[in-house]
Image 1 (cartoon, rainbow, N blue to C red):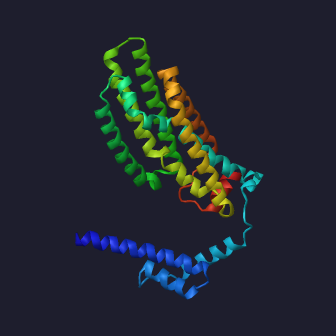
Image 2: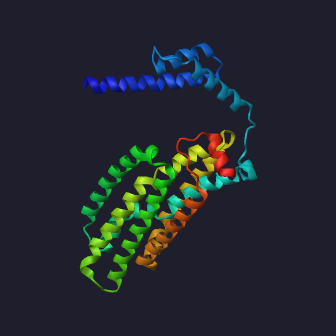
Image 3: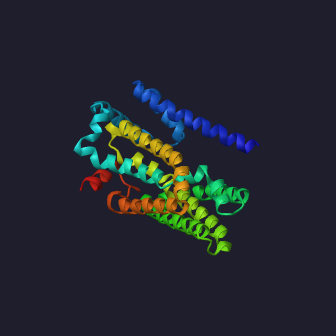
Length: 280
């Protein structure tokens, strides 16, 4: 318990020091800023270069014109906005919230135990999300999204096949296994990349002066997509259970095309390098 408490105290002190550093820069208290930064980095660390960089960054930020929401539609920002918003569309319209909210119903309709399926689903989601976070900086953003989207297509196709077999009373013994396999492949694939990576890319691609407004727009699109997917899922399943997952597979297939041709790799790159890759 002592070790845990010590770690918590250390983490809390580091967070407080970071906040104090930024607050001191913004309020012009340069001496307090350097003291707080020194506390954050350690007594033996040389923080002079980092302190100068942070102060230059803040000064540059203050000199930039304050962007408005309409500025996002200027041509110089268009590709960044298309990438950020497009990734949110890919994330939400591929069916994730419909699957998450109605996973028990999906298993029941496929003739599989909803309790076993839901527990397995939740455990897999936690484990794979942790793996994705651990390898993101090594594997790169773009490869993870492509692997994730490919898995989403596969998961949707497997689930669509299971419902197609059930509707037509073919190979009913395989329906449950196909359904649970498809859903688990789907959620595992989403958790490894499409769940978190679009948010990371969004934080990296926008120029400093529009980051707030562009991030707000992308988040709005994301939440609208989440609502629309959740709202329409039951209607789609009533229309055609296997058709619903074929539709989601098609959307995730389009997401692969979008990522391949539009989204740049941002791993280990500065904002200037990312902007050069976007606008070349």
